[in-house]
Image (cartoon, rainbow, N blue to C red; front, side):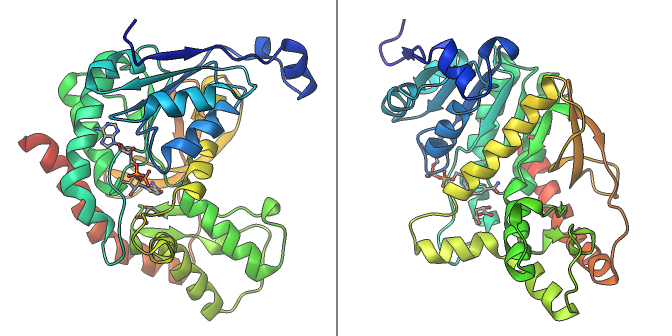
Length: 342
Ligand SMILES: NC(=O)c1ccc[n+]([C@@H]2O[C@H](COP(=O)([O-])OP(=O)(O)OC[C@H]3O[C@@H](n4cnc5c(N)ncnc54)[C@H](O)[C@@H]3O)[C@@H](O)[C@H]2O)c1
Ligand SMILES: O=C(O)C[C@H](O)C(=O)O
C-alpha cells in the first residue's frame, strides 16, 4: 500500500446508526470519489458526503493535502470508510469502483473575473481528470462542479467520446447552487419558509445563462415585475456576490458544498432505485437547439432517466431564454473545440 494512502474504518456501531434512523445494511455499497477534495469546496463536501448514509466508501483525491483531510474526516462516526489519495499516481486507485465522481478541482474566481476567465487553467485539469475517469471508472456518474461549467461539461463529454465510454445519462453539470440561491432569495422576499419553496433554474451556470423560472415557483407569490427582475438578477449574480464579499479569497465554497452534497445525494438515491428523484442539472439535452442545457432532470438507476421540458414560461423568461442562447452556445463550442484540438 502506498505510504500516503490512508484507510480508516468508521467506528459507528450498528445500534448508533439505527438510533439515527438508518441502517447501513439497508443501503447498497456505494463508492463516491471527490477530486479536488483538499480545496475550499472539497473539504466541506467531503464532510457532508461522510455524513451521507448512502455512501459506504469515500475516496478523497487532490494533488496535495488529502492525507490530512481524509484522516480528519475519517474520525466522524458514520458508516463510510474514508481513504485519501494524493498525486497523479494515486488517481486510478481513488477512482476504481466509484459509483459517483464529484469534481470540484480547479481554480476559483477573484473579483473582476468571469467564470470563463478560469477556462485556460480549469479546462486542462478537467480534461486530465476525465481521461482518468474513462480509464478507471467509466460507468460512474460524473458531477462536474469546476468552472466554467458551461464549457467543462462539454469537455468531459468529448473526452469520454474519444475514449469510447461516453454515456450522456451519466454526465452532469452541477447547477444546484443556482436553485439553492433562487430558493433562498425568493423565500426571503415572500417571507415563507425556504423548506417549502421550489424553483427550477434552467439554461447554464454563468451570468445571464442562469435563468430562474420564478413563474413556476411554489408556493405562489404575488410579486411585481420589478421584484421578479430583481430576484432574477440576484440569482444570476449570486456567485459574484460571494466572490466580491470574499474579496480575493475565492468564491462560494460552503454553500457550494451544501449544493454539491444535495446533488450527489440525489444521484445516489436514483442509483438505488428511489422513485421520482428530480433535480436541475446541466446535461446533454434536446429540449432546446443547444446540445447541453440545464433543466429539471429525473434521476434513476442509470443516471438521467428523463430530461424534463421547460414548462410554460412568462414573457420575461422567454426573453431571458432567447438572450442566453448565443453565450451558452459559444461556451459549449469552446469546450468542444478545446477537447478536440489538444
Ligand atoms: N458549479 C458551481 O456552482 C460552482 C460553485 C462554486 C465554485 N465552483 C468552482 O469549483 C472550483 C473549485 O473551487 P474551490 O473554491 O474549491 O477552489 P480551491 O482552490 O479552494 O480548491 C480547488 C482544489 O482543486 C485542487 N486541484 C487543482 N488541480 C487539481 C488536479 N489536477 N486534480 C485534483 N485536484 C486538483 C487544488 O489542489 C485545490 O485543493 C472552481 O473552478 C470554482 O469556480 C463551481
Ligand atoms: O461564482 C463563481 O465563480 C463560483 C460559482 O460558479 C458560483 O456560482 O458561486
